[in-house]
Length: 124
Image (cartoon, rainbow, N blue to C red; front, top):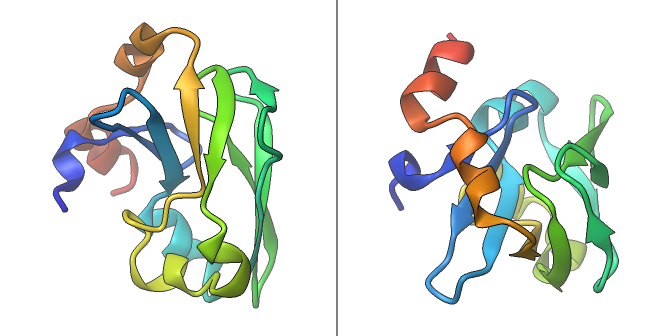
């Protein structure tokens, strides 16, 4: 999967607009590397209304726990339940191991996020 189509936050989350109009959210490879081996993911509740920048999930690694923020506003309509049983998927494939999917309140919020080049510049 190409990471060039993703949008990024300065807090190391990514967002991807899916074909069905939902927005998938996860953490970046940079975040995963900084955290180390992830051993637990606390996901948001279905139906939760969230605002851009709000803390919505937590990941725990062997080193620390870290908050996960939503890059855009909307309603949590799907959670990646596979992460409950296998959070290590985040270690292996951070760009396919999404945490949750949102029905966005305003897809234009994606335009305010960083593109791949800007995010790469941030993490170098």
